[in-house]
Length: 264
Image 1 (cartoon, rainbow, N blue to C red):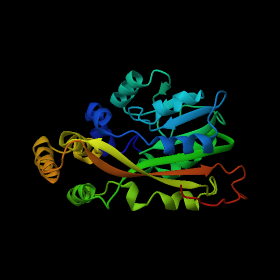
Image 2 (cartoon, rainbow, N blue to C red; image 1 turned 120 degrees about the vertical axis):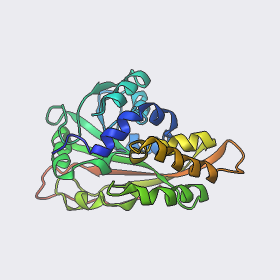
Image 3 (cartoon, one colour; image 1 turned 90 degrees about the horizontal axis):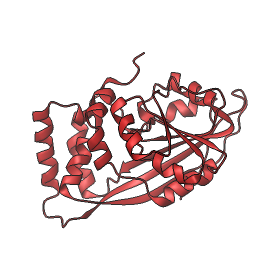
Image 4 (cartoon, rainbow, N blue to C red; image 1 turned 60 degrees about the vertical axis):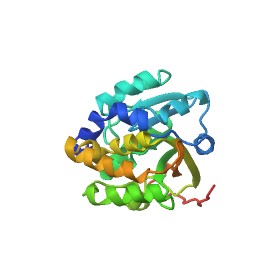
């Protein structure tokens, strides 16, 4: 098994700076919901898996919990160390976490779960979580009701190839089949990120398969992306929806209780 998906490895290694510059943060109400559900507080341990440059990691530090970031791409991990000195940073993947059994009260995964090898990752995540712990997944997804986001998606879809996309929902089935995690609450939050044309181009350039393209092809794509912003007064709202899911660790894989879903 490869340590990391080759598109993710190539794209994110070459785009750490633009990823940090262009990717949005997360809305305060979504983070507050996550913190409450995961019961993050002093004395607790939270591990941010696939932490990237620390976009979510840095928002967990103010909870007072011990925050550990696990990130396999050295360039991303170096940027995380700069942006989030309040967190510990470790080299590792979801499929091989450098952590002891039952060492975390919560695991968070921001914008990354759809990259995982589920057969290997789910047992690892379950192993590291303590009984009663939560696996919390969060994504800023394109709001396709927004004409700009819809136009960008139309440009990107033919280029995505076999690269998994969160919005396709393929990540759900492995969790639904797994006896290691039960069904938990979920919430949805609207989110607007004030942006310029340059910001939007940087955001698209930070996408893994775009970052991995040949420079001439990437430049041609970004010209088309910039054309979509023509006539918009800057800064304009770049609209997302933030989806958050909290899956409880099953204490007994043979007999776990499924909860109910809520939307916020």
